[in-house]
Amino acid sequence: MKQVINDLIAQSLRELQQDAQLSSDLNVNIQVTPAKDPSQGDFASNVALALAKQAGMAPRVLAEAIVARLPTQDSIDRIEVAGPGFINFFVSSATGHAVVQRILEQGDAYGASEQGRGQKIQVEFVSANPTGPLHVGHGRGAAYGATLASLLEFVGFEVQKEYYVNDAGRQMHILGTSVWLRYLELCGETIVFPSNGYQGDYVWDIAATLHRENGDDFRRSSEQAFAGVCEDAPDGDKEKHIDDLIENARQLLGTEAYDTVFDLALVTLVDVIRVDLAAFGVEFDRWFSERSLSDEGLIERAITRLQDNGHVYREGGALWFRSTDFGDEKDRVVKRDNGQTTYFASDIAYHMNKFDRGFGKVINIWGADHHGYIARVKASLTALGYEADDLEIQLVQFANLFEKGEKISMSTRSGEFVTLRQLREDVGLDAARFFYVMRKAEQHMDFDLDLAREQSSDNPVYYLQYAHARICSVWRQCGDRCISPSLPEARLERLDNAHEQALIKQLSLFPDRVEVAATRREPHQVVNYLRELANQFHSWYNAHQFIVDDAELRDARIALATATGQVLRNGLRLMGVSAPEKM
Image (tube, rainbow, N blue to C red):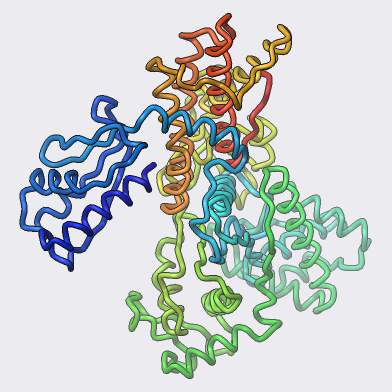
């Protein structure tokens, strides 16, 4: 309906321009929004207020001129100019009834569109270092990314979901060395474990596998392992301490044995992450290895392109990308004086590869702590010849867990954290997925475990699912009474009370809310919509009988209830949440 009204206003404006009542070079941006107050119609537009200054007319005068030229439309009962120049549209009841039938006919496709038809878009999300199991902080990015991808697919985009596996950085070497040190302990060596090593139980598990498969083959004495190593914190430098241990591990084991330890840790944890995400309802189309960038020469290719474009210079033996030319706060090293490329160089190559794969738009979902990284990545894209705006960065704030009003403290390095698997097993998949997308991704989130576990209307996901279960119960009651409602022939004009009219209007808004959520990258818009829909349904259900003696009224009400259930299912499915038939 919004598009219909938008087109009507656009046609009116064109006629006013043709008659020279308005300039032909107006900068027109028509906005149509659902009216908040039913007494003010179903939809409203502020187009007259927005154009008044350009048009040189009082907003209300312009609004009246626009209304006077609006074409007749059967779906609109009446149009009013209100206040300083708002245009209010009252939709005919027959149009609302048609919405119910359309939902019943389209089923799972209701709310879908072809907004993104023919456009390839990539969504890269989670991409956590495979140095441990996913924790609840990663869960928010996973739920947000998966829901956003579903929304984009629902409105017609060709979407690829990608996980970038950071399998070449320093953190992975810290993990590999941590596993080796635990392995040495299992071999009988006495080890003072580094404060900067990974200390979770999963490190012991990987070390046990290493020992079971290789015996004492990789055993070296603790004296050898710690020979020449800088003192650890608090009296020494913990960063140099772990780096020295890594270097010793590589030297003592040799390339083949070290790679065995490293690869076992990597493969084990990537598999754990893959399984946990699948159980969380998140599947990726591609797992992209950071190491492949080096193996396939993509990093050198990216640096060469930057050099050829005149954006790289040498200083102090290192190669620098002149990112300040593109708005970054300082230039960035892409190759150190020892010939090693930087993590940033890998990122440049990775994003070059993304766009070379033909994506028109790339969305990266990052933790909020990566905010300072945005400018340099966009600068590199511009320097490579791409449109920086084709890369979108969506930042996701960390989620804090609360139980009994107390915040649960977590530390990834020490191994003291709640895993995503533990959260899912505790509160259930539906509550976990739903709670993560209830708020804007860039807003801080407090995840209330007690509320998520609660089986009552205070729990928002329970409240939605209960609405769907109630609708299913109506059909079961019909079956128990041997009643077979005829929905295609339902006399929907019988739906004339205030609850029914409000519910029909809410159902008509679903396609628009989906498009808005997809366009703005805001899944919480769908959550807000569904919560209002469920609230309106429960109010109607509590106020009226559905299975009544009047067959026409009964079938009309069951048709509306069925359409409501369909929209609830469609919305919940986008968020990876089930719609149970019984509760």
